[in-house]
Amino acid sequence: MKLKAGNIKKGSYILFKNQPHLVTKTDFLSPGKGSAFMRLKLKNIKTGNTVEFTYKSNEVVEELDVASRKMQYLYQDTNEAVFMDERTYEQVSVPIELLKDKLDLLTPEVNVYVLMIDDNKAVGVSLPPKVKLKVKRAENAVAGDTVSGAKKEIELETGLKVQAPLFIKKDETVIVDTETKQYVGRG
Image 1 (cartoon, rainbow, N blue to C red):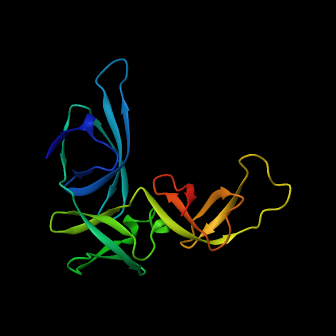
Image 2 (image 1 turned 90 degrees about the horizontal axis):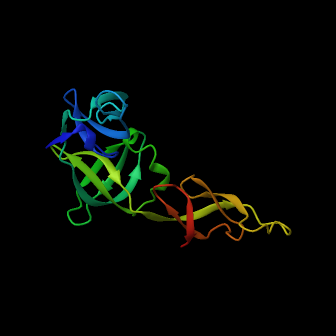
Image 3 (image 1 turned 180 degrees about the vertical axis):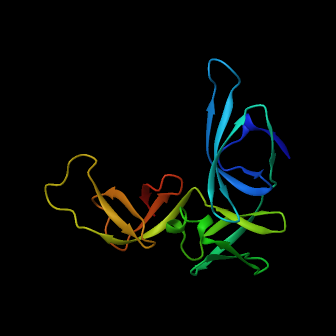
């Protein structure tokens, strides 16, 4: 599908130098003189390398058709995370370098959407808006620490550390926003 460079959004998949790339950052710039342009930060899906490139806003770019399949996270090994289609039991592996910023939000059996291009090659994962995680470590609140909105750092089962209210204790379940990686509430 053809797309004008000025309409590219973060999270889009485009063909850049005949390689599939994920758009990780966009900056639309419109100088006083001359034509507007779009500065992109791209991540190569096959190699994991990142590159910055600038397009004029009216240039045409090839957007890749990305399909998504609902799958369940199973486990992670040294190079890949493995997901399973709950209906067909088909397993799909996604390279860890494509999931680095999402690994600390994945727990076994959480349902996600695995993004696929071309020949059913997995290129990423779309997480639900919020996930429930168990608190692995939380310091006890100390008397006198009751300033309004006081927070403490807690560590979750995946190793993710977030700021949470003082009343959160070890072994409780909390809800974390997958976009901001911030505490939202109790689970």
